[in-house]
Length: 233
Image (cartoon, rainbow, N blue to C red; front, side, top):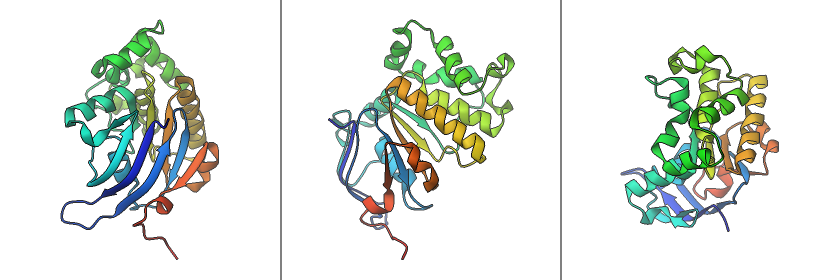
């Protein structure tokens, strides 16, 4: 059984023609998928549909056996909070919270994610520290300071720890390495994959950098699955 299934999904912005039409796309539990697409191809829009932030005009998006279109907005929010971890392109950390508070936030919004941590014998802070240490953030003063005191690379790692905590069923990473040099990018990608495997989470990693695709179980070109895509000659 697939964790995520898209079937005949069509999306258009208000008063505009459809620009995204996907006949079929699936992700299996625990599968790591690399989604490639040029800028403006609809990658972020697709992620919005998958996470339930956006609603398609046609078709079915099923996540963990639930048709997202049949859920209320609040129910979709709960699915996202409980079973999805998102590394946003611009991180979307809360500037008025400390590093630790940002990382543990998903477990305070979702009892299920909190229970996945505590049922394993750890408290939230211990698990947050483990993830941050794995991602190279070990300075005690840094962990208790506002995220605004961190560099871009450090904020990215905090965003990854926040997405990973509580073992969500799907990790979505939207161009998370675009601001990193090659060495930092490769190290971050390796850690993200390792921690996803440790949690048993599926991983959907989105990038325009085709060179990263070999690190994943499968690569998908958005211009190939979107029947409305304008493919360069």
